[in-house]
Amino acid sequence: MKKLVIVVSDELDRGTSANVAGLLGISIGHHVRDIVGADVPDSEGLVHPGMSTIGLPVLAAGPAAVGAAYRDAVARADLDVFDVTDSAVASRDYDAYTARLQDPANGWQVLAFAAYGERRSVDRITGQLALLR
Image (cartoon, rainbow, N blue to C red; front, side, top):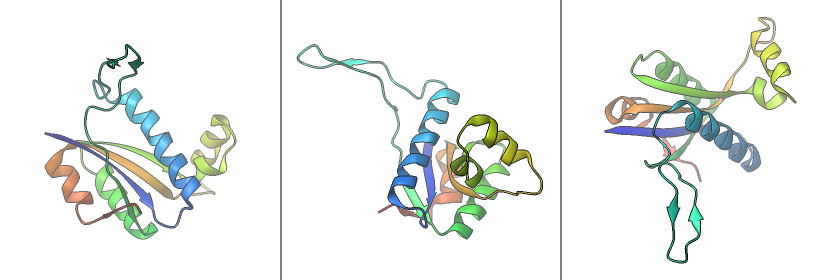
């Protein structure tokens, strides 16, 4: 059984937390095949666009714990991992983001990430983290 989680630094303000979760959702929807279900007509005939076919808990942890969990996740070949870094948040467009991320003098810090894969693998990395509140 597959599981998907988003992990966000608990030091981000609410608006930034919402933005990075949204950015991760776009990446997940684009890269993970068949995660978005079919459109669903309601009882009045209004069509609701498809959404995720699996749950999506949003978890929070301190920056060091987010970084450690991220490093653990990307080290696993059985997980798909998506990230949002401080370089992304500080950039106004994709070219600036790319330049910041690739500049060895800048460095970067992961602010949030999503992990998708078998439940057991995802739980090993994120099972001790609390829900974002």
